[in-house]
Structures are given as C-alpha cells and as structure tokens.
Length: 350
Image 1: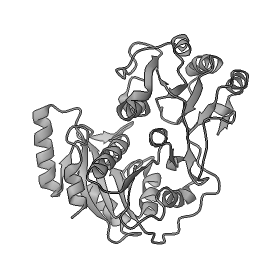
Image 2: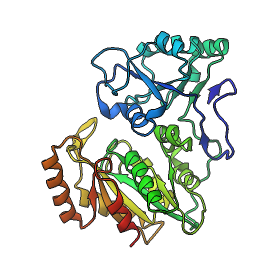
Image 3: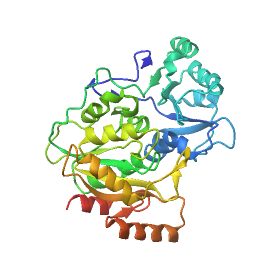
Image 4: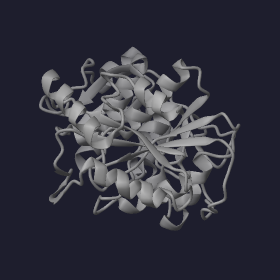
C-alpha cells in the first residue's frame, strides 16, 4: 500500500485508514473533463483549508480555482503531499505523469493516489521515495481477507446514495446530507466507499477495488453494527444502469442494507458518461429498480429524496427542473450544494 512506515495508521484493520500530510498540491495533469477530475474537485469543495495549490501540465487543463504551483514552488512552500486529483478510465498512470511525480518524490512530497494502478509498482518512484523519505500512498487498496456478505441484520440505521450514472454527486450528496443531519442534532457519520471519500474522511474501503465476491461483505464492514439511533450516511458508487460498473453498485446496495436511499442525478446528463451509446434511465425508473433490489436485504428500504447536480442549468431552469422532478417523484428534490439537504432530512425523519 505504501513505501516507508509513515502516513497510514489503522485502529481497525478492516478499514483503509489514511493520514495525509498537509497542505496538499492537487495534481490535475492534462485532464480537461471535470467528470474525471472529481477527486481534486471534491477535495477543494470539502477540505479547501488543506489545499495550497494545483499542478496542471497545460493551461487548458481543469482549473480548480486555486494557485498554480510547480514542484519547486511546492517544495519551497513546505507542501506535504502531491495528491493525484484525476482518475482516467481504467485507473492507469499515463507515462506523461511519471517524470513530474518522480520530481515531486525527489523533492520530499508524499504522493497520494486513488488510482487502480499502484505508485508502489513503479521501481523509479519506490527508489526515489526511499532516498527522500517521502511516502507513496495507494489509497485504492482494500484490506485483506474481506468476508462474503452475510446478509444478517445489524443494529443502527443506514442511508445510501445511489445514482443514475457515475460522477453525478453521490459523494457530495452524502457529505452534504451528513452535514445537515448533524446540524439537526441527528447522530450521523459519513462512510466513504471511494478513494476521494477516504481522503476526505480518513477512513473507509475502496469498494470498487474489492474482489467481486466480497463487495457486499466490504459494504457490511463500512457500516457496521451501531447504536439504534445512529445513521451511517454511505457514499454510493456507480449505477445499476451502468454497462461497466453496475456490479459494484449492486454489491454495495445489498451489503449496506439501507433503511433509506437518496437518488443522485446530473440534470444535464442524457447518456452514460464515456458510454454515449447508452442513454440514462429516468429518475423514477432508477428509483424503482434500486428499491426493488435493495429490498432483498432490507424489505423496509424507502427513497427519501433526489439530489440533483444542477450546475449546468441557469437559476430559472434549475427551479423549473426541480419542481417538475418533485411532481414526478413526490419526493424532496434539491441541489445539495445550492439548497442544502434539510428537506431530505425532514423526509427521512418522518
């Protein structure tokens, strides 16, 4: 998982626990599509105080709204970690990145990656880290000996974010919902199931890296037995309608045994991102299938709201869209960043 015995400590070996050295320099590389820069965007949104700047390989790459810094700038400023903020399809490390990452390691910056490909598999990076004392931290490494899902009922309550597609705001929705629940004096904890969520929360399991037989078991570990009044707010992954990633969505749905789900959707998305030949389901259709399959392990599962990424709409379009969607679903429909999640919390507590 890492070189050098720093930056990772775990009180619970069943979870991937990370301790990152701030401040962070977010590596954007040459990525121009926000869908694939969601790690960097999520960290800026939820941990802005820890971000010192961004490293882009050209000016057309995604701009996170933070200062552009070079490796030399970062080293002289005392930046602790270079965080790989993009996730290309397949999760591999492009050759064009390696020289820059190696320079960062040589300068003493820890490298934090959520890619499927491991930094520790590159001999040049490992050698540079041993010499500089920097850490190579591969967050997307599930703990060993994950169990098969038991399906056994456990105490505590759970609400899971599900989606019409990947990268529609499931992590943002979970974080915003946890924030609203805590504000309402509800005992709630965000539970991370992806690399960015783990970086934000400091703990979790990268569900999409678990062997398929053990995905539901991993989901059970993410949201274990708890107090009867405690809510786990679980970050979702993928979509049941996704031609590539539906399997992880189903395993997470069964293992979470959610008491409630929140449907997440991008208002401007019409086709599966990266799979343009596949159109998206309607929101009501997606709610129906998720409820049908969720009720295999929790017959009482209900949908309590729709969380919409409306960033591609004007204000008038946003209001009309949410109003129409609410009429279609008979559920509170909000953009969690612009509207908050209070109405979903009210529905959850009914």
